[in-house]
Image: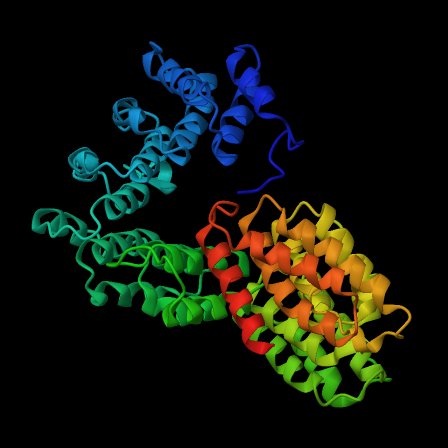
Length: 275
Length: 230
């Protein structure tokens, strides 16, 4: 999100492609992969090069930190570019020993919008130890938040009792951000407003980081009755604007608006106050 | 304790300084802000409160920063000089809040800061606040002879905002233009400026030109509002 990333000077698309093509300088490749996703590059070489960067790490005999470093950004970029053909390598990345790569893969799989990926995401969530603290408590065994959010994106409006049961297993998780992600997915899946309640409560949490997570989850869910609560949350206006944009553009349970109606005007009015 | 300030203001400033938790800081800030509206313009009390609010813009406490911006806006023109002299070059969060306060106060002295911010600031939130502010300058505070040049500069800045790579800056520029056009015509500005401003809005309203739905929807709304107001 931050434009002032490592070598934050503006570069051209050609320059980004050639930085990703070369193999000597890892940090240049890392930046180039980020850039192509961030700028939504439409260049025909962008996706093949990103896939190469991802496959390079997947095929490496051992965990090469340099390859992984680039592969994580390539994975994120493939999601941003909605590269449909990237699903098979992303599903492989979901099985990789590197937690960061699995997390990036889960998010990108959610962005591709292909519901055939649901069973693979559910399987990761159901691994023994998936929801328990690992690596000295910093993170969970699996990237649960990303997995849950991706499931929400892929299962919107599909009644699926088995999936609901899995998601409900996370509603009392000890980490509020995981609870929020689970409720978001359940809200998207069922459209049932009772799943919005826990997120609305977390908008008032004492921790800024938790309020931010609930804000972004409600925005991504498209549940429009949350509009005023999002606008009132004690968090940065830039995040509130992104969340409200989600409510305007992708309302839960109805098609994207083609023209302005009263509900859109109300949300736009909330956004105007935050500029 | 500053002996030149009234006991009430001293007490409020001290409460902000001694706040030990983010909740306490929010509470103390809000209570200082509610006092701001009652302070005599340009008094020592008001200046001290303004300086304290400026410092709060740089704390990592969005709730307190929102309240501090409201307090600065309530102080109006008296807050403009201190805002212009205390822009934090190293913290773009703080700068965004300060530009936001300047944008809402609408004092023309803020124009050079808003122009520079919309054109060159690396923080999208700073460019966003500046774009909105360029449509909100209080033109009637200017001498009639100054107006055409100032209005022209505002429009240049708004055009930059409309072409920004970040959707949120384009959105803010659209909102800015909606405020700017009626003001500019009330100030008796040449028709060419109004025409150019309108065509900027019309471009943003086209789905073939603008790829972000929330931006074209907002531009469509602005055009509707403007033709309704006419």
